[in-house]
Image (tube, rainbow, N blue to C red; front, side, top):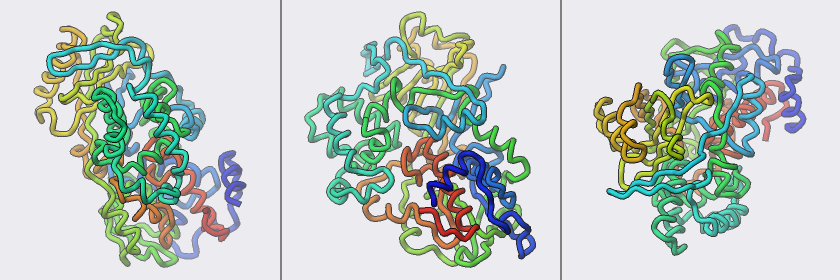
Length: 475
């Protein structure tokens, strides 16, 4: 039944059972409240509307839509993404959404040599769109990942054994050269937000499992999850969905309390008032869910999952804008890896027409001065070492520290520690009373990616529709 419903909904042909779209017997009671106007929540809302359900509202704490996607407006229609921005092979949900919204894509630029800085040393080499990871070790990880289903890694036959180890523990046993180990660890940190010593092996294997059991597909540009960008920046997907949803979205409405989740009608208390509904889709990071008060308290398993979900991996991205991508004239691709410095990774983030040159960078929080001018100067000096003195004079600089911009993010990605999934993973997906959990962390494949967010939104909408039509919960 779920498969039939999914196919019908995807085609926009779900016929709601009589009574679902009719006025509620209780005046002022909606069918569905969706908490969160990121990709997951907006996808769920869009699916409800396409299915004929008009009795819903989307509550968003921020004064904008997009969640963990955000575009810096650089002028003249040019943007640079401050949050999630890439997609790649196997991520069919995000590409399907882009096509439906008429958002074009273009390839991430990687042609040329990457610059590696270590102390006073500078080396330029061609990674050919790869992540610099060791092929033999990647194959070992892929083989291990085959037995770790991304939908439920805690159900792997050797889950308990794998979940005792960090990814760092496992790498140390592989006899890697320093430089190979460095790039293996850096790739994982950029994907998950956690260093190998913090990252549970089981969780990382489940992400590789999402990527067709291929480390390259997870971590590379060429043929990987960083291969493709969206014209207009990734936030444009949420902006377009929001335009179609109109006044169904209520911004600046943080949810403070959810009361009666175990009753037929749930009360959702926000800074802008109380909303009542028969189902609530919670499209938020589990750690952020923990900031909401629940009455009655949630069951112990779900409550502990939220309390213990890591909230210590904010991401900071910076943007340098130049007249043109001048580094390309010297055969460089704009990528920089700095060993022991504030630039974890810099990359060419220029628009598809190359009308300006943009270098974006991932920098660990606290590694740069807090003053924007000082941060810009520090980074410009590093870029000058890599690209020459032209890098000293950007036209614009932007700095987006996700741990500081608002209280509604906490972190961008989720480095799950060892022991977490085998103890608490089973509580991630199941509904609790009238609460349906969504957000990229709940996706059965590509969790943590924009694609996972879209998939989780589709699934949450189906669950809500099935419950409202008395057909049972979608498994």
